[in-house]
Image (tube, rainbow, N blue to C red; front, side, top):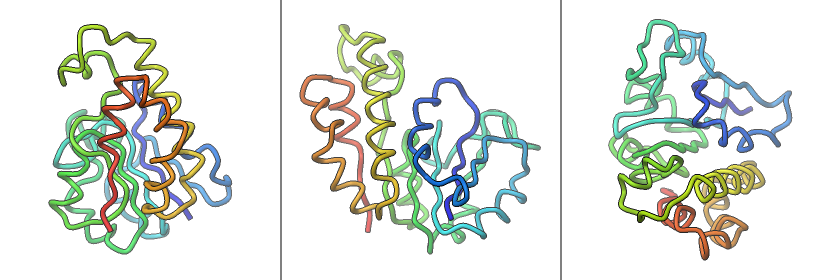
Length: 187
């Protein structure tokens, strides 16, 4: 059983294909509307946890979608680390590596900034010629490609992504190249 924690936010909708191929009877999607304690109880019932959206080295932001939490408070943070230790974990949010390593978790994660907006590309110095079209292409191919492999183990997902359509796009798309270099696996 898979639980997806993906706070509702239009700027991260490109991540929805990551869980689009998971059979509905095996999937729980939580976009908000529950408290942190309710989410903890849901996580306990699942063996795979996908944390998707915006984050920092301290966890996944709630984006104001969860009961009792403001925009910049965390819905997934160090408090949940003990629950995640024995689960398959995939974390796609900015600075997920720092979060994962600080709480001694394993799984597939993004390190540093994951550029999904032109402003983020500019912030990370990817060049003045980054266009919305390039970002949209990177986002779309990333979501669809990773979604094809999400049923695999984190190590298998990582290895599959290295030879995937997204890796191929990274040869010609600077945004995809930057993001591809930041997709990591910790055993």
